[in-house]
Image (cartoon, rainbow, N blue to C red):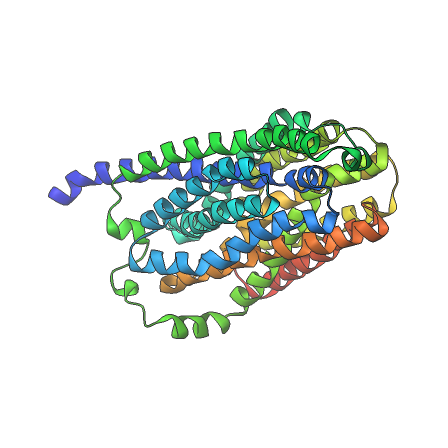
Length: 428
């Protein structure tokens, strides 16, 4: 009788926890897409090549790779909730570090602040994704994750808007040649004003993350619900044995590969949209960023559409189809000239909308007690977002932004291949 009386309380807490987790999905969307324009911003402020400025993405996504496995140990030892709180706290500290970085006016300090913030977001994402999957029946876990992930582009749109409204318009119009001709004092004054604009939205985001941390900290989630698996399943037999089991599963092994190239494609497409627009039709960084905003609005709408379509079609079929379409759009953008190529890049976001949560759900399906470490491997695959933008940046420096979109085209082909593999070998 006492158990039955507690059920409404338990379910109410789980619903509240789910709603608060949705704010986390939005939060790391804000951080990721407010960071994308920084590649262009820092290349201008510090007069660097596209390859050098792409270290922004290397620091950001490299942190995801480094912290995902420690996050899994936190989740196994404690709970998903502990992992979420740890990630939010560390991300808050990293965002606050933008303040001393703006005072130092040192590129390396900004990279360190980005690394700390992204390290926290890595722990947060490693914990929140499987947490959502554990909040209900396994048979609709992928669709539930797609629903939660649908709120991520709400954050991405806010992130791009903040960059477009608070950072890009405050960049000085002086060219690299004009900056080189300035006195050191004049150049420092210009940089100080620009870096102040960079710092402001990140410190504001730190305050928001702190509020989310406090709200989640006071929500009580029962241990069994929090884990998403039974007490017997919680008894792990060590990381080496878990890794060995995971590597024997083709759906997981190739899922990690597919996630690497999915995140690589997404980061490449969005990071260099501004450069592509400026090379194609000209304009300022602020005006070119409008097309990045259009991309993310389409991404937001498509996330909800794809969540509905997954209820009708197999996720694996949609993944293969959209991977192929994404590759074709990238090739067209690389070969076309003018506005049509820009709109092809915008359209790619509709393909991207399905991929991350679908690959995640397919790869983790049926892993049971190995889900926590399995989740870490898929978040570590976000390393693709650190490596491939540097490759594309090098291509831009040599051949231009237009041709560089062949890089994400190759990534999409590999994602489509995983979709085909999943159609043939996995029942979803």
